[in-house]
Image 1 (cartoon, rainbow, N blue to C red):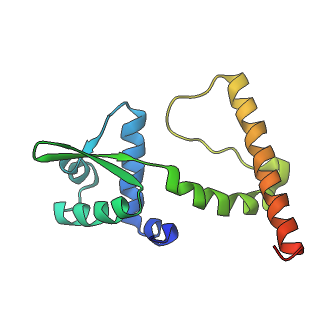
Image 2 (cartoon, rainbow, N blue to C red; image 1 turned 135 degrees about the vertical axis):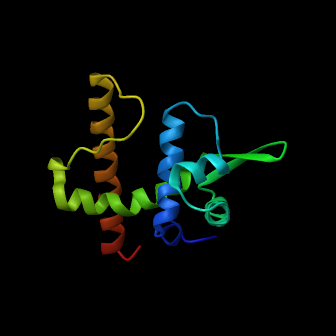
Image 3 (cartoon, rainbow, N blue to C red; image 1 turned 180 degrees about the vertical axis):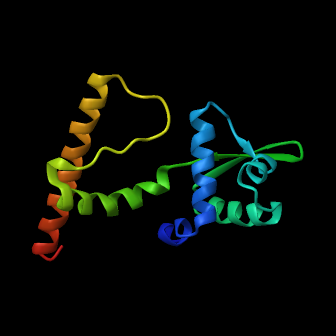
Length: 138
């Protein structure tokens, strides 16, 4: 399997992922290659090359409709990036971690607070387990 960090290291692929995320938040069920070309201002062969890499890494899914293909974001592989990054944020910021704005529908205040508390607890627990395993040679 392709290393997710190598895949997202490329700026054009990150631009494509951000575009797909934004269009998904706007309610699109898929984005065509021609829409990506128009929105990002890069050539069709370049977009197709990067979409193949993103498909191989399972970061995008494709739906065929006749001769057209529509791409959608698949965020599950990015969990590896999140798992790697969270301990750094927890170590660096502790309870003072900066808020991150994600595009899409905002959560109601109560739900946002609950999600933040659960997320921080999960990150802290994951970091504690990882640290303990390293100490005990796991």
